[in-house]
Amino acid sequence: MKQYQKNYLKLPHFKDYFQSQNYNDDFGCWPIWNQEIEKWLANAEVINKNHYFKQKNRIKAQKQRDELLGEYKAIYLIGKILKLRVLEIEPQLSNGRKNDFLFQDKNKTNWHVEVKSPSWQAEVFNDSNLSLVEKIARKSKPQFINAEGHAVSVQEAVEFSIKHSLNQFDKNNNNLLVICPSMYSEIGFISKLEDHYKLILITNLLDKNKLIHSICLLEPIMLSKDNEVKYNFEFVELTKSIKI
Image (cartoon, rainbow, N blue to C red; front, side, top):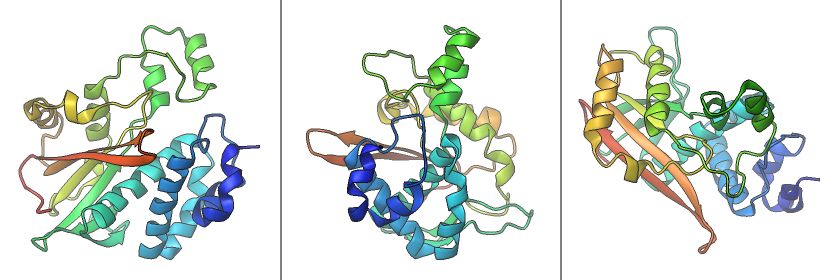
């Protein structure tokens, strides 16, 4: 039995989403993370109850689960931590597509947001040090393994996110890309991208039509000594700034 089943009564939204799921990673085994996910889910339900219930089908596969939670943690950052107004989840665009959500900054400027969560499983298959058999075997194990060392590529995470977001943006809107990876280990965006020039250079090379106006790097981390989750985030202005 999963460890997180023990505290279901205290986490009604977590129970609603995950009580019948059986993942092969260690998702749900950390009470502090479960409590934080409960906040993300509860916040999403308040904003759009219909969307909240429809998204339950997305969490059967681990990759889709992580993508949905990436979206929900980004919405939580914008609405609850930064106290900005979240206007809509999955706003319809003129090009027939949808963004993940829409919010208004403190200058009352509307921002369309696309959230990308580069996956640790994709990272496994990009690891040139592993054979195909080893890659398949590693995917069947938990995401985090003590004393397992890997070189986490910030550049790969950024490139993946940019490439997979471009066709989701409408050129007539103010567009924000949120990158919140789920990798082997904490990726440490803030320290590894101190020089924003590198991020801006990568974006300019990939985003020829200047669709992305700003990028938010988001990585919640669990501080064991404090029994809490800290939200590491940083906004990088490309062509437009967000008033927070």
